[in-house]
Length: 289
Image 1 (cartoon, rainbow, N blue to C red):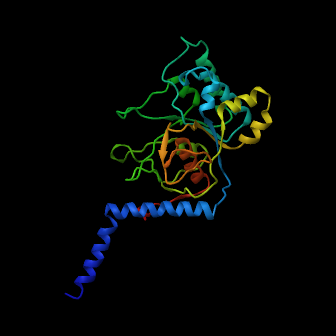
Image 2 (image 1 turned 60 degrees about the vertical axis):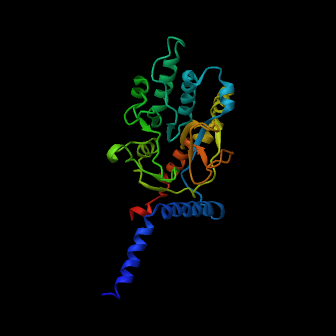
Image 3 (image 1 turned 120 degrees about the vertical axis):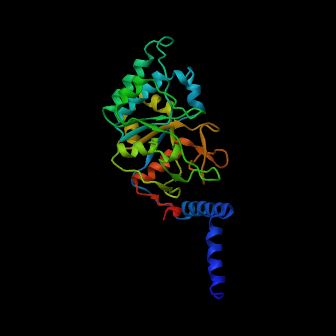
């Protein structure tokens, strides 16, 4: 019996050590190193990628109104996208919660018409979120109604103990409740059931983006073929790509642009998760095996 005791104790110690916070932290960092190594030295192309339409500082300079009053710009963008016939469109912005017609006549109608035109050719999913108290930030109901059933998804992420986003999980509400996310809802609208697990950050090239105002400028110059070549049949995500705005901590930089260390625009995280869903690159988390 005494001869068996040391091996038993050693095995028990090994089990306990793997659950210590320090060991867990090192395990996560090793995973990050694997992602970076594979991305740098063994890049893997994917067959179904995501196109980013980004709002940057130049976009704010191009539009005179505050972002809350961009109804006509978004409406026009959706009309342009409808002409390009994408596979699906996700909006990583929370649209306004009320009508603005009293201060900008016709603005609501312009946005509604754009959403409706786009919905006729491709699924549209609008991002939603919560306030600091955890309550849903409401979108003006007509916008959601026109977008149709299953047209909203939470632009939220579950984080690891060190604050980084490494895994996709739609059960992070209170008591493990289901939360339909922006990326997950888009995947389902595209006929792909999203798997929960580790996001493979090693696949695909660094994301580039086309500025939102640039797309509208091309449309204004009649360059529909240029827009179609970029967007036709592609999954499109629209979101901010400004430094220090909607930044999320991830294991490595997903963008070809420079952002603060350890941060990346949230829209790119949604896009990387979608890459995983569309190319079967979401991995079963090791602690779930």
